[in-house]
Image (cartoon, rainbow, N blue to C red; front, side, top):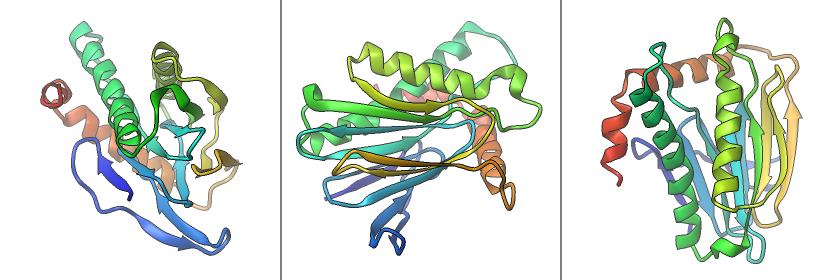
Length: 205
C-alpha cells in the first residue's frame, strides 16, 4: 500500500506507467512526497528545491519528497524559526509514513539531490544552498546516514529513485526546452511566502 500527501493539502497521486523502465511510477511535484512498499519508480525534477530519497535498506520501503524552505525578505527570527519548523515537518511527515509502512528507523538511509541556483535574481538569497544545508543538517541530527548526494550547482536535475533497490539515476538538465521547472518552483515559493507558515505548522504538533 502506498501513501501520497502534500505538506499543506491532500493531492491525488501522480501515478503513471513509465515505458522507459517498464514499471509503475509516481511523479513528485513541489510540496509533495510519496511513500511505497512496492517495486516502483519515483520521479521528480528539481531546481532550487531539494528531494530526499529515504528508504529502509533491509526491506526496500521508501519514499521521496520535494520541498523548499519558506523565506521572507524580512530577516526576522520568528520567520526564520517558522521556516526551519516547516522544513522539519516536510521531512518528518515522510519519515513517519515510511515507518508506518513497516520500516525501522535504525535501517534508514538517505540520498539528497537538488538545491541548484536556477531562479533568476534570487542567487543572493541562497535559496538552493539554504534548502541543501537544511536537509543535510536535519538528517545528520536525526542520525540517518546520507550515503549519496548531488547538491548545488547552477542547473536543474531530473531524479529517478527506485526505493526497492535504493538505486538513483540523476539527469542534469544543462539546457531546458522551456522554463516549466523554474515557473513551477517560483509559484510554489510564492504560495509559501503568502501562507501563514507558522500557524500551519503549529497545527501539526
